Length: 406
Ligand SMILES: CNCCCN(C)c1ncc(F)c(N2CC(C(=O)NCc3cnc4ccccn34)C2)n1
Image 1 (cartoon, protein in one colour):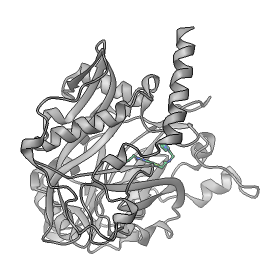
Image 2: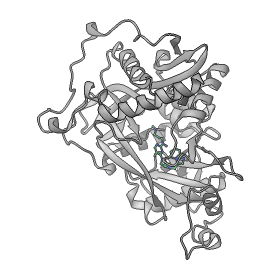
Image 3: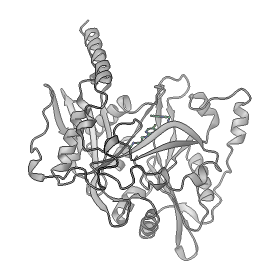
Image 4: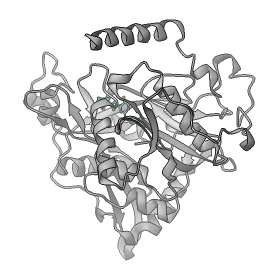
């Protein structure tokens, strides 16, 4: 009985929240709003003053408490895995939900220089009900000179059962405080939703690898004249990649890959600079997490590389399949091999690794291969955000974005 009342209360509260204060929280944050886009000058919107940063965590409603999650600990990692598996991002029709694996979360959240207090959890009676994370990055913004040490925010999640308690804004304010206390004042993040104020609006494209499964799980649909057999023929791929010298990346390639990547990224308006340690972490292959292949020409010279990460989705209600296996394009650098050929090989490699679909955003040079390789535009939009930073140009075009957030 109480549960019913609680649900009704929460539902009424959610309606109220949506109706009378659409962005009340975001209007309190240092993000450019529509009519400031002309007046604000480029750079930080608010000057950060270390002395003003609260030393103690934000207060939580009773029984809720803060914790730093140690992802190296199997039990704590399992708790994060289960919270996200059951409560993280779903598509608009609630047919799919991301199923980030523990190995993936350790890859994404334990890079070199990670801060333990930036993996933030909220617990009730030892059960994890809220989560938000930050990792340290150095972001180059709009030109070579401007590089800013900041945080990359990700995995904001509140358990379905306790939404509309306004916990998400507290999670955001708390991790902001933990970033400020380290004298860092900017952040970069992405979201499928639009809140004040996107710096770029990018779109997802999908390339079918297993047409039959995509139709069975409802990811794709058949129009009147199409049949499964015709779809399979249309998307059929060769057994083996075409590029001479294509092979999985190894430790010995780290130095060359670092040079290739840092040089390649300079053409974009938003990009990270990578140390060899960071390239080791982000690109050395990890089974069922990240795949990276290099093109090695004579005398061991590496001229190109491709990479994609593994992010399965749980198929929420389907008699035949529990998961959709999706590979997401990561960073691809083509200096000698034509990018269309390199990405065609990426599709073949992903198909051979058992993926059902290959996803890519229309960022970097991706427009050059999306149409030719038969990617279809998805319904998913991914918006990029910069916290406490006004760009010279109000918005960036997707092809000016040189960063991929997992
Ligand atoms: C930093 N974090 C951003 C990445 C989180 N990522 C991968 C994401 N953020 C918003 C999206 F719109 C999205 N899409 C991939 C496209 C897609 O495949 N749509 C159908 C689908 C299959 N499974 C799911 C699960 C959730 C949402 C849509 N799903 C749309 N991807």
